[in-house]
Image (tube, rainbow, N blue to C red; front, side, top):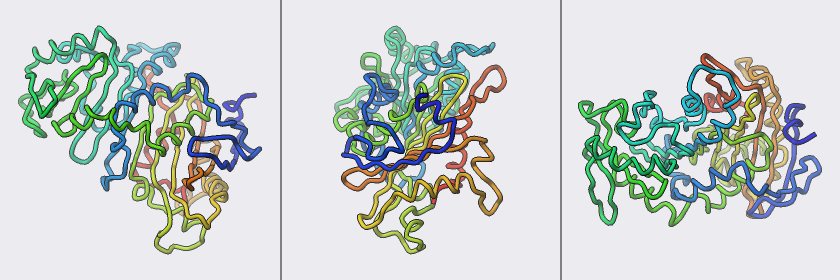
Amino acid sequence: MNRFHRLLRGAMLGILTVSPQVGTAQSALWDWSGAVDETPATAPLRAMLAQVPAAYLLPSGDLLASLGFGDLDAARRVLASLDSDLPLALRAANRAAPTARLTMEMGAETETWINAVGFSVADIHQMVVHENRTDAASLIALSPDAAARVPDALLASGYERQGYMSLHAYAAGEDGTRDREAGRSGDPFRSFIGLSARVDVAGTLLRHGRTWSSFSTLAYGARSPAVADPVVRVQLDALDGLDAGALLQATFHPEAAPLLQSDPVAALRGTDAERDAGGWRSLLLADFSTGAVSTGVMVLTADWPADLDPTPLAALITARWNGTDIAGRSAAVQLGVPVEVNLWQTADGLVVLRLAATAPTAVGQRGVTTNPVFAFFSQRLRMLDLNFLP
């Protein structure tokens, strides 16, 4: 029986002590050796994170800052066998496109994109969306034919080739503005509200920013990439420790502490005193699926004081998942599935916590699918109501 099937049997608690790269397990309760497959589930995500700046995933004081990843290729493979009268490309986009304000503004009339920008959702392999309170940018991996069509399509749509410092891009609209009269529902970058846009293609990678500032930050992303950040590597290794199918989407939230509104250090010390030596640092949500079954994952990191053993945190979270809060709610009852909680600590003291729960994939009208656990995590986060965390 592999680890994926053991997920269905119930919670499993573990405590690991590892080097900065996730290493050999020190507990028999979790038999992950730390070895990563030759083609890990996070390989497409790692490739995209090699092209975006590490600054995207550093705390900035902006609670709305996030980075979303979607693997539309993987979604098409996973969903191909499910019956639906809706085109596979649209079902895959619905499932895997990052949950972000930018993707909502891109609109649903995706079949008209090819006329406005040279590609459709069927041409997207993977995409990354970064947004904060005031700006947004995206990185899209396209098929070669689609990438070649983009420049002429943008020029025909009214974009102009412009320069900014040492950079060049196809630009439309004054920097950071919106003009509804210039809006086009078929243009995913300008949207129906006429957002400003700067777009360029290098090989098969399309880079887009709403402003020259966001475009230039993304354009130079590979110089100090997110994938090289030690905390990001630990989070990705935690995802690769699962055997749960294909990774369809993931969302990073670099401002975890104020979003979670909880203090794990104080919870274990038994005090509500102001935190002075540790606490939540970053949060990652992920959607895995084999098709009929989906796994929702939450990976948390926390700066941890040297004088406090983090081990009891896993049991505390499991108890809260199964128990009820003051409103009589229980995550276990709402979802009908148990949670697997794994916790380990890196050599430099960072605590890594992984929650994973597996449930049947929800199938809605016209064969549109969702991951119930990922949706539950995402909704609770939007509501600032992750009551199962201490």
